[in-house]
Image (cartoon, rainbow, N blue to C red; front, side, top):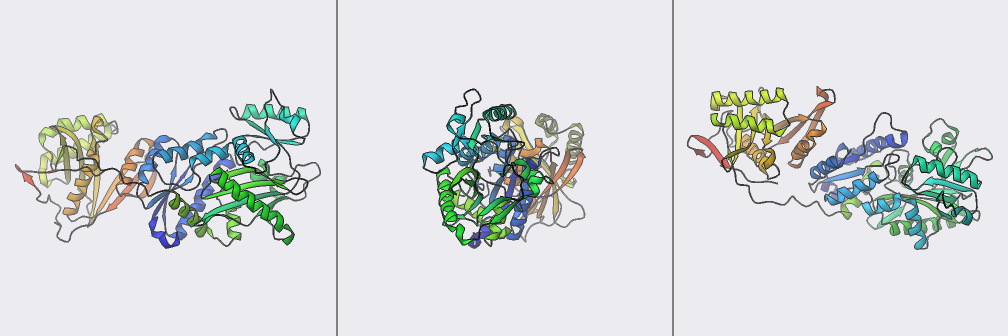
Length: 538
């Protein structure tokens, strides 16, 4: 991507929301987002974080990222017990035509289900640890596989479900553990595998122009673990800061020439797993060895953790790839796998006439429109009407400029802007509103396009738009994003607690011959009123 660094100019970092009470395995996504932000800063690419809580937020994100120079860095993960959300998010982004990093939805669905992954790998002739599904009512897997067994939920990641005592030496222990897991993770299968006693390897892969590259391979070592304490990557070893397991679990890279036969076999296995599972971008494959030293695949992790200090970052650094190079490789893979986002189809112009003025007879239909949208509170209705009354009373001498869209003789929508006093080239775009039953027909886009043209003709080049950060206004923010407006800043709790202010800006190209005066420029006068027909730009 180094030759084409300019092809991606902005990246939305999409991640799941994090609440203060969430456990570290969930909150870790914020560290991932911060890491990606730093990598993008090294590359000179603008970044904007987007917490994604529901399908409406995903749709708005996809709309905002339609520009071919924009990409989504997909960090959306599943909370404990909600394993399907990461997969569903990727599927929704695909259906919406968005371009995003990492694995496609099919690979995420597959690798999230450990039982399904085991079955596919085994069918392809790849070695997996002996085991299978443990049904507490029919635990025949315990008869087929020798103990000790390690039990885990089939669809959780980040070592969730591997806390406490997941390694069981007796049938009674295994059945008791299975019952606990079934209660904690309803709707998921339970995996029972033979607990392999050998070395544990976590192998990161990073896609390049020629395909996946196996990064330097580390071994997870369990230093000074007492006799009887199982040596494996438990939840405590991964997340329990201050615990014995966390402090005594150490990652060490294999550099001894005697390990090369093992490393060669592991590289072969993980590359086959990448192909079989349909991975892309980056991944991690976890393996353990049996008594003879033969490696077996435990898990395939699509979109593994990319935070500082995580296995992917540490292995990439060992390979000489800094934060910028790592992020760049992942972006480049996404560009290769996704065709440029198609431009929004250009529909025929709506039969809407846009008039650059406000008549006295517009007052009542304008008020009805404002109230019908459901977006204006009582105070905002009063302010909007106050601006309209000022324009009606003072005409072109008013500070406020109005555009009225008419469709079949009906007031279909309106926009209002005004010069920001004390500035040389800035204006406020106060309102754009469209009748609820006419939304989606391009009227708002046509009003915005005509307002921008009028502003440019007046010799002004900077348009500022202020809107709420509440979820209700997500579609409004996406509307401006999709039309070239960038987020200049946010003020938390500006309007009310939990209701901040987002300010967007767009810089116009202004002709040197533009009228520099604040008054209305002459434009298509019809019977003393200024008018023009708007066209759909969506």
